[in-house]
Image (cartoon, one colour):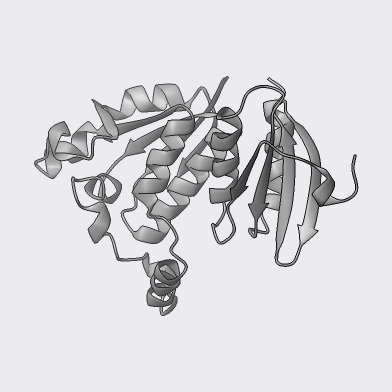
Length: 83
Length: 138
């Protein structure tokens, strides 16, 4: 896993900051469906629920969490669509 | 056992309907099918155009009711009906109206929001709920 958020290039970025649980997760699901298998997506979320919800969904849905990078007041989750 | 959550939506206040919409979203996200059985005040809240007018909160809230509503407005939390509609776009959400309440309130399926798909009796709902992993009364 790469250490620095800037090193991961993504195909699409969704800014869900300011949206509340379960908003960011729902945006992630929609976003993943909109990219091809193998594509990557970054989700910016300021919702504290995302810390557990995003990894739980990614695992359940069979995708790959490339990283969760804490930033100032939000977290940048990077996910690869696997199926 | 079906991979399904059944909610009995009895309450018609904004706070409880928000819980219904949030739980539905989470369940759909985790791959569960969701069935809502609307009855009594919960059904009344699904009358066409009523969602915008649902500004009351449950008595449990006490003095905090107006504070909650104000916070929801200030933080631009999406409305419960909108949240439910979005959940339905992502997964299997079925909304049923209780036949008896419709009769009591003198309503027809056409008087309800389009998200409500069918009128069912309590027995058929219970039959399906008995096979659901999760069943809650809200």
